[in-house]
Amino acid sequence: MNKVRLATVWMDGCSGCHMSLLDMDERLIELVRHVDLVYSPLVDAKVFPENVDVTLIEGAVSSEEDLEKIHKIRQRTKILVSLGDCAVTSNVPSMRNRFKVEDVEHRAYIENAQLNQQIPHEVIPRLLARSRPVHEFVKVDVFVPGCPPSADTIYFVLTELVSGRLPELTGKTHFGS
Amino acid sequence: MAVKTLTIDGKPVSAEENETILQAATDAGIKIPTLCHLDGLSEVGACRLCITEVSGSNKLLPACVTKVAEGMEVKTNSERLQKYRLMILELLFAERNHVCAVCVANNHCDLQNLAAEHGMTHVRFAYQYPNVPVDASHDWFVMDHNRCILCTRCVRVCDEIEGAHTWDVMGRGTNSRVITDLNQPWGESETCTSCSKCVQVCPTGALSSKGKSVAEMEKRRDFLPYLVQQREGRP
Image 1: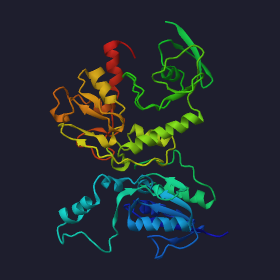
Image 2: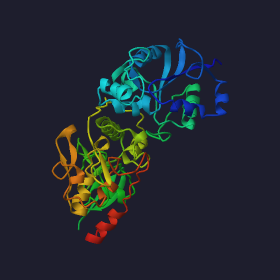
Image 3: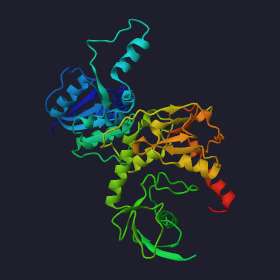
Image 4: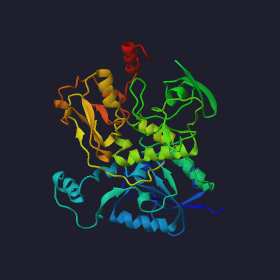
């Protein structure tokens, strides 16, 4: 049987969902018998590949880079999973939404900066006006709320997907931590 | 007192004529989801989560404010009702800024629990991200409008149990806000007795005690049926 081509992506989130993924501990070894991790902050691939079976998205869509990525990822992925509250609801990143981007940048890079106070104009992607959940931009197939979803929840989601089923998550996870 | 007989989810039930569908269902061991309802307070039908299907009516009727009637046939959990309840919950989440992960009421929140119970995995409606304030002017308590669902439990407990009527509702539609006195800072209220009843009955983290951090705000509601019983002799 062919291995499932799995990707994980880190957008506007704290990496907690990826930490939770690693919290599966020895179950990771069992999973890699069924799964090829083709793209992830945890592996070295630089370009999001073609023909990905399952992609887990951590984080909200907050910058121009996220926006470009999410459309490319959707195009190249069969089953797209919003993993965690930031991808599902925009969560903590959305708390800046009531402010103007210029005010947010001024707060971060000028008011609260000790040294070298300036708003970056290169390398750092430009923020969108608002940070928004993934499904407001592209079709999402599976939603996994939680901040972060537990290792047990992620394991359940992945084993169901590997077995060709869409996971039914009622009662297994909830918004918040 | 006349007794009415009706069926709820196919089960024959008898109830006193002035009882609501919610009371009759609860007595019969049938659970209808509620949010603005709280034992000991008057009913307002604000949240619409307890909607039921009643034979002969095309409208969905809220169980908390609909009186029982002879021969009534009530359904409490049809697919249609589940669909609308889920929609109500999603709209509540979309209307203000609910960020469960960093909320004082995380894991002790009626809204969060209902979302989980109803299998709400995401919100299909566009989040509104309203610009609403936090009032931390009171010495002991905080009002965070980001987390308010306008259930008016605070308004009712303050008026009906404490007798102060510090809280009320201002504005229309999505611009509605709960206010203290004449829309002045809570800390400057002349009527507030600082009893904390509003904080305890609030279903979310909108009203909380100062100094509580994420997930630390547990509400204590056991005082309410006790006070009602002591004062009026009704359960």
